[in-house]
Amino acid sequence: MDTAAAPISDLLPTLQRLRAAQSAATPSFAQRREDLDRLRVAFQRRVEEMAKAVSFDFGNRSRHESLVADGMTVLSEIDHLRKHLKSWMRPQRRRVNWLFLPARAEVRMQPLGVVGVIAPWNYPVNLALIPVATAIAAGNHVMLKPSEHTPRTSAFLRDLLGEVFPASKVAVVLGGVEVATAFSSLPFDHLLFTGSTAVGRKVMAAAAANLTPVTLELGGKSPCVIAPDYPLPLAASRIASGKWLNAGQTCIAPDYLLLPEASREAFIAALKANVLERFPAIARNRDYTSIVNENEYRRLRGYLDEATARGVKVIELVPLERGIADAERLITPTLVIDPPDDLAIMRDEIFGPILPVKSYRSLDDAIAYINSHPRPLSLYHFDNDRARVERMLDRTVAGGVSINDTVMHFAQDRLPFGGIGPSGMGHYHGRDGFLTFSKQKAVLYQSRLSSMALFKPPYRGLADKLVKFLTR
Image 1: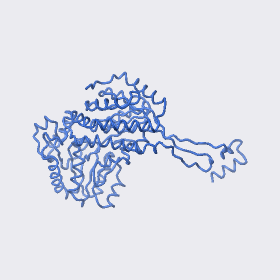
Image 2: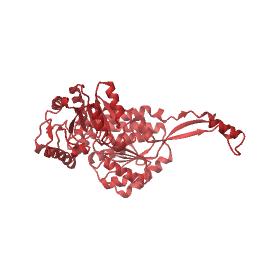
Image 3: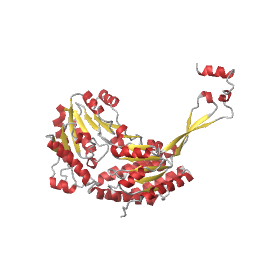
Image 4: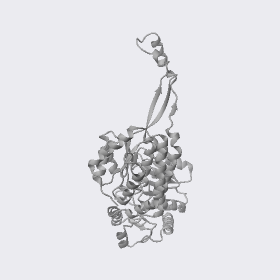
């Protein structure tokens, strides 16, 4: 399978070719619907091949998790786009201020042109194909840069999209950091980047030179809070589902947990029991995902080594021999109990199967702790008390929230997905994605008769009366 990097000198000519083809004609509803139909059929036919490619890149990636998180999500999003596209494309009538009657107004949805998409390695298909499909639905052409850390999957995406679309509509660019840097400097009509906050800053700086609008889907430390009287076994089950999906390599995974000190030991026991039901063993378990590469593995191992050296309690929920862990790039589900905030594990986004557990004395203390840190991509609150839930929602700011669950808000087609501040900017998914990749063009249709035609120099008489009336 060819995974050779694209020559940097080819990037701008590729963009120019895509733009020339897109500007030649605005694709009709029928054309866009056909494009989405063909993409769905081709992807559904090759979804098992996709899961194998992703697993190859990770060393081991749960087939079931790939089929759901990178398969079902894409197919569901395409179905949602197909179902609603016609109504989204329809011009929207808007009321005209009475002074300008009998004119009429509308908003038309117009394609931007060529959309650039830079996709990450953790969900390399989902986070590539959903933006591509949404941009196509909005009538754009697309240039995709998948991650170099999942080369087999990136080649799969190139072959899949090459099968579905002509090279003048969708282009896939393979390569490493140098290619990604040059890619983000291209004069796209819109650029969507998914990745770390640090790289997101560089992407935004590069795009700013061309005044390219950006959507940044970043990350950060997403907090999880358990209220004093919430059932701990239920919380443990739902936190385990969100935290250890893809071995924690998820931008919206719970990054750290806040709970009452009195509940801590009971929660740890409930979580350990739940995790052992899911993963009786970690080594050679096809349902448990490896860390994607050696650098990421060593980074995560470094967090645990630092915590241990500082005397912080570290609990492996499932035993795993260190030699096997190193050989297979496995980090077992692990808790770090009350780590001080100066540890790297509390400063960095973890992006792995390690969960710091910290105690709070009151819900106000938990809210204050969350608000003392950069605004997160996601927030999770487990509570059946409506007043406390409202207080959490009202007093914290996050990209998205799940109440009494984790990560599930991402899978909702009708909810916008996106961060805020260091966790990102802009939204996509469903209609929000369609709007992100469209220009909402304001159009006023003036009538043969216009009341404002009376307002013209010389400004006296009727003009004086009109101004006096309008400014009263």
